[in-house]
Length: 139
Image (cartoon, rainbow, N blue to C red):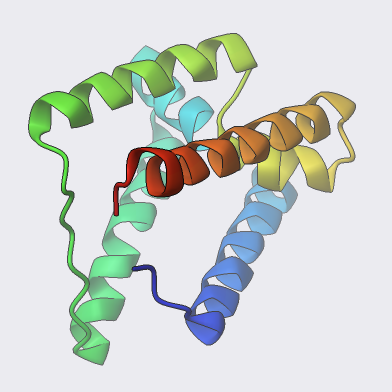
């Protein structure tokens, strides 16, 4: 069962929003994680590596400082995780960006393409969760 964590979610959302605004204000760049990662893989590494390092290290630091334990576990095995990652990569390619790029940055810029993409992936997520929890009987 998913835990309801409004204050932690609010704080996380505010920090993501702050990071997005700062990246746009200071570098004129969109904080879509797929675009950031693609840039690292294709050669433009500087700020992108720092951004990715912060995205990974900040939660680890916060959990260490606060003494919180966050279970990083999945009921799916590694083969399913790898296949899922591949499917997400294909979707990102055809969708012209990832959920963070469209959902956070694109919607903030009132991009029609991003608004439509966000509606599509939110509907898809809802249908998937409903199907797995209520039709298939998963957790």
